[in-house]
Length: 127
Image (cartoon, rainbow, N blue to C red; front, side, top):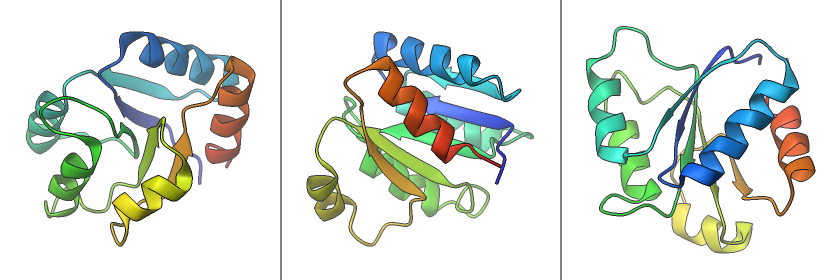
């Protein structure tokens, strides 16, 4: 599916800037919004008339981690059907044990290079 509207929720500014640069470089005409606070993101989503088509969600965040936010999203009738890609530094095996039965579209480890990030995003965001 081709996603035109994406929300990135990540408290790390440098990671978010790299992510935004990679999405821009893919040149897929995607509207990307970034929110650094999981609490603010959840509040804005709950009050928004226009929801994103896809959410990229960091796991390691203060106060509310990505799993806690994912549970809140999936327990909200308006937000539960938005696909979520969890993105973080732990290995996929570790994250599978944490995420378990929670419904996500994919999990990707934060890449070690910009090229690897481009490749991961390109494969996830293909039409």
